[in-house]
Image 1 (tube, rainbow, N blue to C red):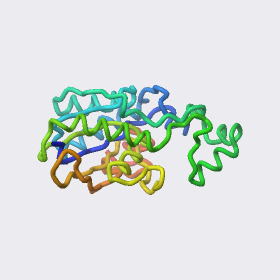
Image 2: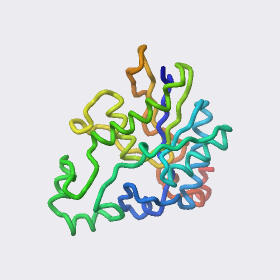
Image 3: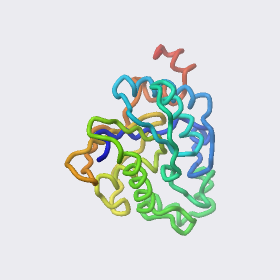
Length: 226
């Protein structure tokens, strides 16, 4: 068995997000805007879904985001290291300019579609496999009417969606990124231990203009979004 609905939630903003630094598995906390996003995002998600269970990456930016959701719905959050962000090796903590300066050929290749394995980055296939295994394990006690909320990270979620749809993550990279504290929805179809997943929504979140959501509550209040 597995949950009938899978909601994949990206964590709120961090200082690295704001500075456009590649986080990978560096354990960065939410910033003030990220905490606001996590709280508002949790309320928006609960207006649409009633999670039966919540599981999160153990990195603190995801764990804190999950806790807002858990507190709001009254559920204990489980943690699983298999839901961590993709590791980007030597590039973690760097801006795009710093990556270009230090690894011009590798960065150009990455942007054109090749994998930056020479800098120690985790393979997309490995990310998809570990994430899918975690989803299967945490969903095995759930049924078709249940909702499993999984709080994770942008690259990991995009890769996981590809894997859960049965597409080779190394061969297809068509899933776009997600805003902070937004979510995607997959529905299970078919019987058996391995369901067929359908992507029914992607990059959904609270009803704010993107520039207001990224800038945070002070900007949103100033512009009349809250």
